[in-house]
View 1: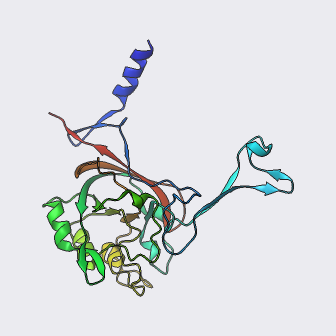
View 2: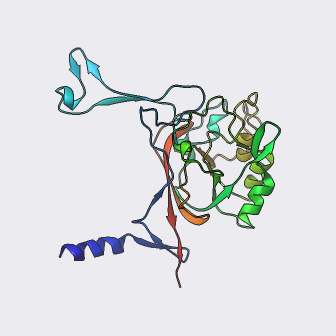
Length: 265
């Protein structure tokens, strides 16, 4: 009986979308966890997150200290402490919330691996590299895995390291072919120290004036940074479930999940 119930549950975990079979029981998590340890990735010159119990007088919100529950406060920055998804409100004077901009959560996505090219002191991702990697495909989302794909991406302190970044021309190309969601395993699509130009951010969201937003700016498009895609996950087409916490903020910690696709013959 137990095996029968398990078989029924597994059967219910299968889905068919656009003539593809999807096994929902086999998610591929490409997010990085948030912790208060040195294993947490860091960017933008901040310290690691703080996770600690609430205290009132002699009461400590921790079971090991006599409380009935663990009751922690968490202090973190979504942009600098792990996988996060942001909307154009990240760079505008007016307030825009990721919770209001992202209203759909499943997308056809293309995973591509790119080795940034050396340009002077920088390593950059070019339009030609993105165009070649997509090979004519125009998915709703693109997931960029940079090579070499070292595991220290999971815990690296990126501050003052001048990580690779996306050239403006590459962001323009991604926008012009209609991709709405850009995911990357770097702390930013732009150069760490760029004098506030934010060329790739602006190009992707089509933001021409950060003070008075142009009507054709892409409010429903998102950038997700600081992901990690294991080498065991092959380049190709996936179903992306882009999950965020419901923060009314320009960005939220997020949990992008991929699902493999099988052709339905």
